[in-house]
Image 1 (cartoon, rainbow, N blue to C red):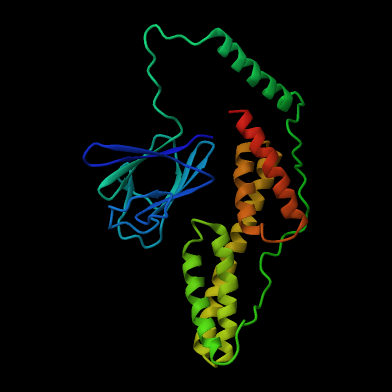
Image 2: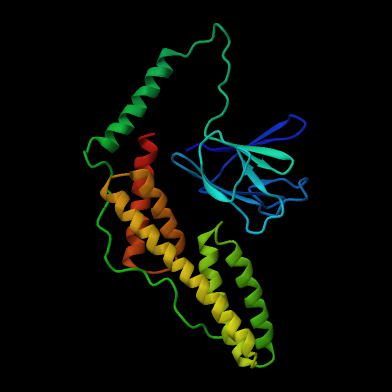
Length: 285
């Protein structure tokens, strides 16, 4: 699907950028998907925008100094319809799934050959995919066994004096990745392993207070992710039962972000269906 972010500045200028991939970030960092380096008051990655069938999921970075407003109301995260404008500091953003229509010259006409050729190609594609009443080969019966996302305890990769350095590095990385969980679920999963590693390393150097803090932070993050996994799995099962394929695709991708690192029959089932659901949803637009 085509999706764009339009940046509307105070001077009336407009910059339009295409959303590449499943999601994009907006912020002052030059590595953000939509970089706004002149907006110094923004976070490096202030917003996450993820296109979906009926709009975009938008989330604001935690503890962002610049508030975000939609229709004059404070906004933190949620689904926004296409065409919604987002107030972000001194500028506005608009999320849209279409470009402005090109104006044709009065006497300019579409060639009948091109027109009928395009219709024919689209018809052949649709027929090949949808002539079977069930559409593409979507397996609606998931393996019953749940995925174990985490391994549990992690060993410290260092020993002696270097264990403290490893502990501090792991703890810092764990915090950074846990804060990015709303933007990238796989970062949240990695943060739990890093908390466990930091916990083990602090244990080697006898810093029990730090051990307890890392265990507490890791347990909280693990519980949050496992709850999200259960919710996404339930919603996917309901979407499959009701043949709500766009919703099923959203939940499949959410589950893959949490589980793709595991070798498991359920993950393989998700990967297969993600391809088929993508094809089905795009064809039926």
